Length: 518
Image (cartoon, rainbow, N blue to C red; front, top):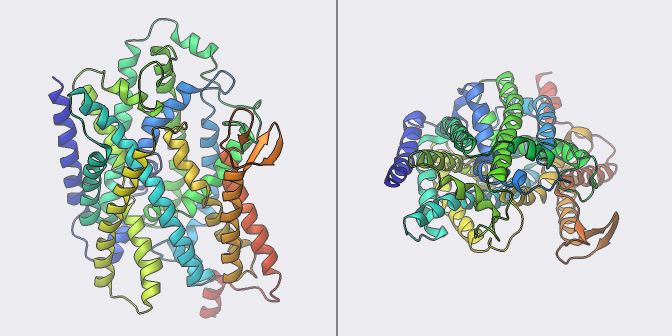
């Protein structure tokens, strides 16, 4: 009967890319390929944004956060981040988003080029490309986990390299032919699929749990929402750090990351983009709560045993997949296809658009025709697909010893650069005198400072020390939710001080438009 599961998975891997190509249609221009000529409805973009930012990491790793949470931590405190996400999106919707959509830009970093110059534009774009490669490499690896477990049930031993290569081919297929329109629509469909898969898991678990499990979970603080007791410097999800850090993280990821901005710029106008972005914050909150609840149900089902020591798993992120393969045939295949759906949310279009318009065209220095821009966009889609597969395979080879859930690792990578990216945008808005050299120096300084804090600052109690050794029970690292606020603060401080050297303020793009019209 397990053959039914494999048939469902195979049908999905073939059918979803073909559906994407059919939806995307023929791409006639680079604008159509990169931003779909701004014709996609806001609610479709909203679902696409949610799928792009949570994907497999949410499906596999967020339940583990609730499962592994101690009574002192609370099982639902991860939702504090989601509350911050909503606030951050609202700010981006009214501060940054109008500048992208009204300016008819292809990438977010084009705005930095208009505000500072092409040097800052290229710096931000290259940073995005490198960070997105690492983060999406983790995402692709995360999807390979349940597939490897399913194949093992049939006695088939497949390496992570083979699995991520297969997934990469499926992902690049519709991104290459269908452009951003195919990506957005497939994202929306796939998000609905993996949510339905989660509902199936809840239904199956509900029939297996003993009476009184809910009360037992409540007694273990599995439904605690806020953590006011943990240290705001080193706690897992302390309220102040998680809420404030979540807001700044969301501003960076949805205002300075081309993966999300590209989708928002595919809407018809500013109001549509704002509705899509703000609504996505509330959808993400509900989705986090949904998968955290699944984690609590699994905790009750497995009696809270250690996934590695007691269940023999390679790492704790395999727990959800381990349960899924034990479900009845057909249901298991449907849920696994949903997890694959989360993985196929493609960043290839965002990587290609930023490479072509922010980097290659600037280096080339001669204008490209629309036909050339479209051709290079497709070439770079293929190149980035290959790099993602290699990155995912390398990460899989080194992941067995890691202790953190995959979702935490992915956010940790973004923590090195998100503060500098968001800070560069805010610097141009707040300090009118700041010029390109100020922004670049502030950007580089921020990345160095944040990297030093992440790697070298440990806390013994509330006392900071310089120690590059791995954190342990006595020496804890600064909680990662402060990384983005710290980065923004450093960028604004350094860039702001440097801008004081200039006697006149530098006009921003909106003022240049007014002057030209006058």
